[in-house]
Image 1 (cartoon, protein in one colour):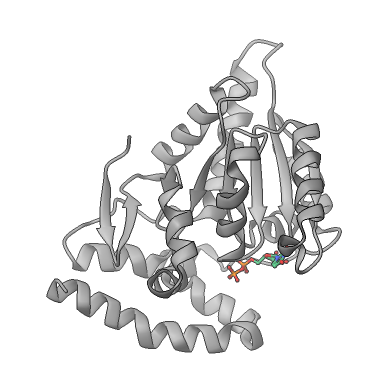
Image 2 (image 1 turned 180 degrees about the horizontal axis):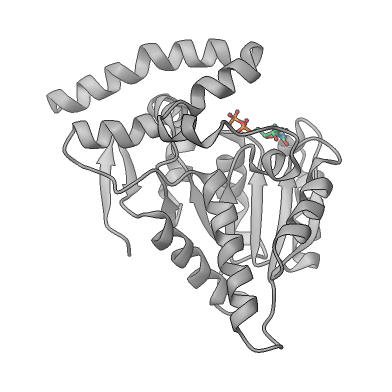
Length: 261
Ligand code: UDP
């Protein structure tokens, strides 16, 4: 198992992108029926929610891989002398995993199977567009199903059952779960024992990014740790209140950790 650090009460795996991809690839190499492991990707907002949301803490406990998505989380780890190797954002992990699958399909024998992927989440039609974009860009990745459940689906047992059956029918290796936090983490934690996949990745807006529905910040902004600012300017009505709260609480978490409280 990968080494880990404790930050704000969260166990975060101290891995780089290459190791994260390898780990998910190893899960995918297991035989069907070996169970579904899942990935969560803490950012500042998760760290803040984590303090007051017991269900989210449980969901994190069940994760096979906890990757530092937020640049401020990585910076805090360095300030607090628990340095994480690098930021491993969910939206970067997915293309990196697909690159790995494409390379595998190039180098492996002709009967090598593609990586089977199911897309769960985003607005109606978006996952289908993401599927088209994936097929165009990555040979070796096959989208075997998409679903955009309506708002509030998670409270409806019939709908949850239908989703689990659709996934079981499609037999994916990986389910990309883009339902926003903490919904995606709680849903995956609750249903992982019955998820017919080898890996589930809780990856927020990644399906939107793959479809071209939302644009990620330019690389230079990502490198300077300003992706949050780009998101804020593109979706201010949804994010302003959240970011204000996080900007108030997160420094307090860093301070508490610094003082060893
Ligand atoms: N979403 C969804 N169903 C829901 C709530 C959200 O499919 O019930 C999708 C939404 O369409 C978008 C993604 O979840 O594609 C939100 O991801 P983001 O990372 O922006 O969410 P956050 O965690 O920042 O709230």
